[in-house]
Image (cartoon, rainbow, N blue to C red; front, side, top):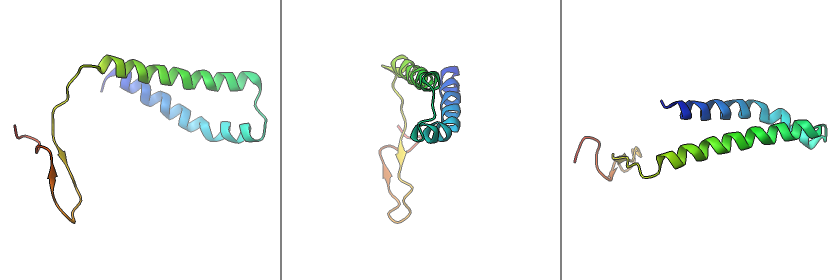
Length: 84
């Protein structure tokens, strides 16, 4: 896994962990100015990291197939993995 992907996952994990407490405090109007700005900065940092990853991936082509695992119809969409 790429370092930038790991960074994104870590940022999202930390935000997900802290979001419930932030949300409750927001609803109860218990957040200071600094707490709100700090959380907003963390959201912006995560968004910027995701944007950076997306921009770096522009122009890359990923090849492969998609298999529909719906057992009721058992069909393959696209090219099966391993076929040309």
